[in-house]
Image (cartoon, rainbow, N blue to C red; front, side, top):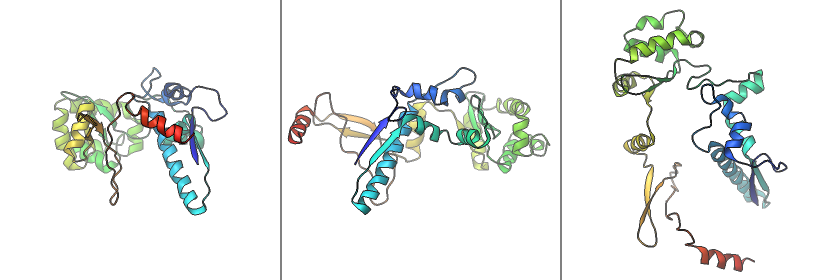
Length: 259
C-alpha cells in the first residue's frame, strides 16, 4: 500500500504549487475585497495532507479486514474544491459563482470584524436570539424588532445600514470591553489576535499548544503540539526536528539494507 499526492491529478503535468492551486482552484477569487488574495498559509497543502491521512487510514482499515493493500491518490486541486464547502455547494447546486466579500459572510449578518475604540472585534452572530442580545447590550434593543433587521435574511438584505449602526455603537469601547460584556450574554465575539495572541489564548484555555523537545546535544526545540486528543492513546512528542545531516548515516544504512 502506498499514497501519492499530485497537484492537479496523476495524469496532469501542471506543477503542484500551493499558490498556483489557490489561484486556479478558485480560492483566490473569493478571498480579499477586490484584488485576488491568497490565504496567509499554504492551506491547500494542509488540506491535501489531511485528505491523504484520512485515505491512508481508510486503506489500512480495509487491509486489516481483507489483507489487501491499495494505492491512495490525492491531488491538491480536488482537495481544495472539497474544502470550499458552502461556496462550492452554492455553485454545484445552484450555479452561483461567489465573489470576493472581504471579511463579510454571504448569508449571515453580522458575521465580520468591526472597529472598536482600539482594535477590531469579530462578531459571529448566527441566530436571531444572539442578535437580540447584541443590540440590547449596544443600547439599541429596538433594532431586534426593526423589520429591516428582525430576521437574518432581512439583515443580509440591509447589511450596509446595519453595519453602519453597529460600527457607530461599537466605537465607544475597546475590543476587550465588548468581549467581556457580550460573551456572558451568549453573543459569539472576540478580538482579532496576532499569532502571539492566539498562542497565549490557547495556553490560557489549557490547550497546551506548544512543547519543548530535546535534541541529543541537550538543546531544547519548541514545537507546536498535535491538536488531536485521544483518551486512551494520547499523542506524545518525542523527537525534535533533526539538524541538517544528523541522520544521514542511519538513512544510508537503512537504504543499503533494503536495496
